[in-house]
Length: 297
Ligand SMILES: [Zn+2]
Image (cartoon, rainbow, N blue to C red; front, top):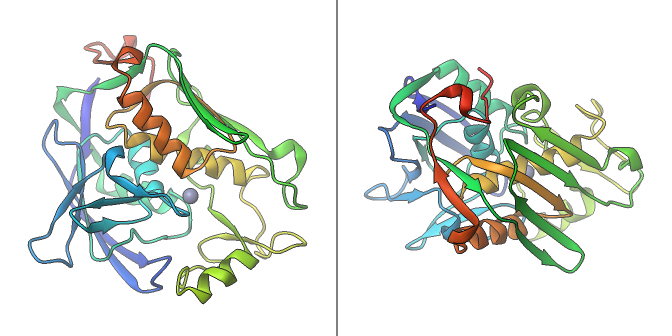
């Protein structure tokens, strides 16, 4: 299985969740073995930040990369799309300190990459294969990566709120049998009205609306169109985790299990794996049939 990038450059724009301002985004192919890089097109000398877990310095509501005081925020939905389509090498130029929120899911990014087209490169794709369990926990929340033939993500949340039906707080995505694009990429982010009002008082979430999030009040879902899936909330948590886990620098061969995890704990897990060389190895497959992961195209 070979590395992938996009066939041609492509651009779009969207609203920054926190600033409420228009943000320009451009994507460009990168050569083999370069990885995923962000670039601030609005700053002098266009500083670059590689998509690496070690550079995550702030996990307040989203995953944010900071290098030499240059910041790129809210990277997780975009990285989830990049991971889901199996893109290894990509340059992402952004004109603000945050990736635009789009519709609150990863679907707009998936559609953009599909319209640019994907191209196979010369070098073999490198996977990080989990060879021994790694677990992190805080209070009652936990997340782990364990050995598994393929890539599977299992997530459970526990919200005591009328919009969160008991049967729909657990979900699973298996990369060998489930379709990332139709089953996961459409799941939107969600927030509680009282939290959003509080954020606004601190000049945050100025771009947040029912156009880019599921908004909940004490009674239930405020969006008139309702949910895209009965279990959209927990599916979105898997979407987030996929983006956060891609900061490990490779697609993963393993099983991710999590209970009430979020960006901070996901990042802690990735950093713990990278600090435990006895728990993983980097592998390639010169034969697609032997590779336990398949990407839908
Ligand atoms: Zn999210």
